[in-house]
Length: 142
Image (cartoon, rainbow, N blue to C red):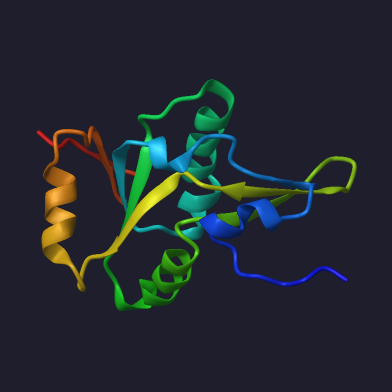
């Protein structure tokens, strides 16, 4: 029987061999994308494809900083914060087999009502090149 444990950076090595993990060192990632509204859609699309870029091509300059604003976001914020921004994406393959992948592209995460100054500072930093909101609209930092 498999021992249970919490998903976080420290426990990645404990995952079963069939679980695909980030191949990049998350400590080397620079955050350049700020995404407001870390929804299911964002995690299963933009964060997934960003994770793929880092895994396949070794990009280290496209980490995501997630920002949640609403009280209804507090639960997912708390869960992802405890998991160091890591989460599991399960996709069913054409042959019916589930592919289990750990997504690690969210390397920073803020709940704006708790820390509005940090959010403003993150959005204003020179390393941030893209701001996106939950309606998938790009907001220029300039």
